Structure formats: C-alpha cells, structure tokens
Length: 595
View (cartoon, rainbow, N blue to C red):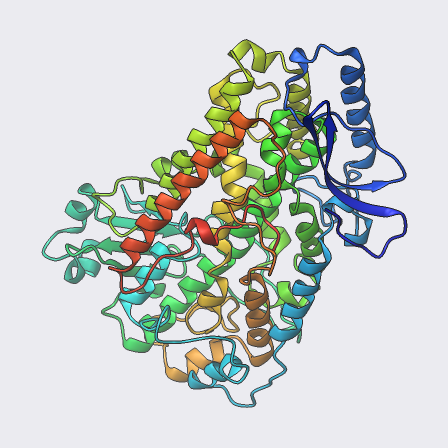
C-alpha cells in the first residue's frame, strides 16, 4: 500500500509479498523509499541467531546507514532550547526530520485544522466568572458544564479532579506534615470526622500534594504585555472521608507563613481563591513536568536510538517502533512553538516551561516512569486506603496486560538471560540511550542501564516505554480541554501574587485570573491537544504487521482480547460513577505520542 507525498521519486511502501514455490515470503518495509533499498524477510531474529553471512552483513550495513540518517543533535550552549534536557534528532524544524518521522498528510491537515478551529478571536473588555463561558460557548466547541465541571467550585469537585484528573501522580500518602507547612490539628479538626490529625495520618487518611520544592527558584513568566505572572509554591492537604470522598482540608500558598494558610473554615472568597492558586501550581507542574517532560521529552531519546541502533528485523525494533516513531515530530513542534520563552503558549502559563523541565530532569530517574514502582513509592497503591483512584486501578490493569504480552514476545526470541546480554545490537541501543540520549551533557544516565542483562529487566524497560508512550500520555493529555477550558477551574497563569487570609474578594479573584488573551490561547492549545486525529492508531490496532510469525501474531491476538476484557470492565464501572473516568479506556489510548 502506498501513501502519497508531495515529493518526487519517494513512496511509502508498507510491505512486499513475494510468492516463491507456492509460499508467500513477507518483507515488512513501512518506510519511505528513494531510489533503491535492501530488506530482510519479516521473521524477527536476534543477531546471534543469524547464520546467513549476507544477512549479517545487511543488518550491519543497515545500522551504519541509520546512524548517519538519524544523527543526534549537536551539543548545545546554555542559551539553546536543548540545554539541560534529553537529547533529540539533529533537526531544528519539522521539515528537517527524516521522512519516516514526519506525519502523514491526513494527520498534518488535521492538526492544522484543529489549530484554526481552536483559535478563538475574542477579547472581553470586562471579565466576570460567567464571561469565561463565552470563550467556548460562542464557538460551540462541544462543551458541557454539566458533566466534568458540574461541581468545579465545590471541595468535592476539586478533590475529585486532583485525584482522578490529568495529574494523577501529583499526590502521595502523608506520613508526616512537612516542616514548611504550618497546619496544626486544630486547623483541620472540623474536617476529620472525629479523628485527630495524628490519627488520620497514621491510618492512611491524609494525602499531600507538595509543590514547595519543585517550584522553588523556578522562573515565573511575564505575559505578552510584559506583566509579571504568579504561581505559588503551594502545599495541599487532602482527607479521604469515611464515604471515600477525596477532600481538600488545607492549602498553604507561602511555605512557612501562616498568613497564607487556608482551610474550608476560611472565608468563602479566601478559600475559593486559595484553591485557584493551588490549582495553578498543579496545572503548571502537570503541563511542563508530568505531561511534557515525563512523557514526550524523556521518551524521545529511546525512539531516536531505536532507529539508530536496531535493524528492522530485530524483535525489539518491531515491538517498540509503533510506540516511538511519531514522537520526534510533535516534540520538534513543541521546541519551536511551545517551550521557548517568547512563545505565546509559554507566556500564558505562570512558570517557564524550559526552566521547570531542566530542574526536574536534573533529578529524573528511569524509575520515575515505571508506574508500579511510582505508585508504591507515593503510597497510593493501596485500594483499601485510597478508594476511587481510578487511574491507579486502570493503569495497573493495563500494565499487567502489556507485561504479559511483552514477556510472551521476549521469551519467544530470547531463550535465556545470556542471550539478552549477548545481543550486541540491543546493547548498542542501551548504550546509545544511556550515554548519548540521557547522559549526553552531564554523564548521568538517569538510572537507565548501559547494559541490559536479563529478560525481566528487558521486559520492564519495554513495558515502561510502551506504557508511557500510550497509556500514560493518554492519562495526562486527553483530559486537558475538559480541565482547562473553564479558566476559574484550573487557571494556568495568575496575574496577582497570592493573597493573605482576609484579602479574598470577588474582585481579587477576577483581578487574579488570566486575562482574555491568556484565556483565549490556553483554550486553543488545550482544545487542539485533546483531539484525536481521524486516522489515529489505537492500542489494539495491529494492522501494520511488523511481526510476521504466526506465533507472535497469536500473542497479539491474546493481547487484544485482554484489552477488550478490560474495556468492558471499565465501561461497567463507569456506569456506576457520577463522573466517569475514561482516559484509560483501551479504545481511547493511541499507540504513540503524536499530539
């Protein structure tokens, strides 16, 4: 099958089938071909098992050609957008990317169209909370306030969004109150259903979102009018009620200063504005940290190295390519249009995207995206202590399904740990990721091994990359429009510094919220990023057959069956929920990061 592009003498070939002596021999291509190219048959094989000297030579030549074609970007200076971040392709613009990394025309036209549809040309002279509705109601952008945002202004609504919204890894079980948080038992006793704060902590009823360290000394932006924006180093304390409701019980906007400590007993405007400031901190760390850095940014080196180091007949290439191919295109766009200090997107959020990402990448470890380990470390893995955490339940179920599929594929191709360690093509990929992709500036490989030694270790790496590129990105990306379309719900940029107790008022709220231009641009971005492309490839889609062996196709069929079973379970659960959690429905999870 061919796909047209406006380039002479270049065509995309999916596969070639040669009938020889009554049998079909399949050559999976899935690449743009210019002039001529050589390919091996579709059977996946590790290099030690290749006996044919010509095929060995062909694999070696393919890797040499790929290393030249998929070159790493040059080492940057401190003023360069790549400074202090994971490494990427040597392409400054989208058009400079190799053909296979570029989007097909259907997806490109869709993105261009969504940008146009989302660009709302409205300027409001006078803002009120009601006027924020007009930004999207006027454009009829398929928005209903009676679903996701029906209870946005209640404590129950805020708690629900903090627990099951777009930033599910931002909460942790509280075992001790942080030293810079001034909350006391007397402050929160009315909200603990007869328990003391110490008792509630001991039995696992108290949870924490602490942005005081992560946002410390990170640059705050100025908007397009050169006005300073604000985002507090907020700390939020939450309580799991006896009925399972997740509720905010204390918010401190300036660590170490009780004048900036708020509870539901504070005045209505004080508490409402404190929740908005907390949500601003949460939104900025979500957007730049948990979304861009922890899915888009840290995964890109794995994709670049995959195309540089593994031949197309390698089983790990076939396994991971569908999840990693599309990432460089959207990340190149982001480096040009979203992350720079002067971009409208960056200037619409309070926090400098590049500054926060660089700070978080300094301490990033590969374990930070291995979700079962992350949930255990955060103390949010216990379903009895923390009910209604639907992200955890769906993510762990998906992780196990992926794990089963990957172990099937790996044990089919590797008979022992020794074969993994002896796979010199695989080790070349691991080395390239560790040294050139992650540790390229400071020598710190962020906990990713230069040598992969066992099947379980390889399995964990593959599942982590597959999950992050599909399910995790879906969890933190496709709810953005729901979350940010109504700016009072989760303002991403605030125009006044945090208020003290007693300073909250309706006017202070309106003066603090984003202006019309900021609101306009954030809605546009959130809308564009939350839409699926018309030709989206979802998790259970194996129409592109990189593997040709019947046994592996059988593994894929089993994998798809388990995904369908999980889909049914999630749909059944959602019918019982007032606010359904749908971000990890397998049918809504794209296979890769493409937006």
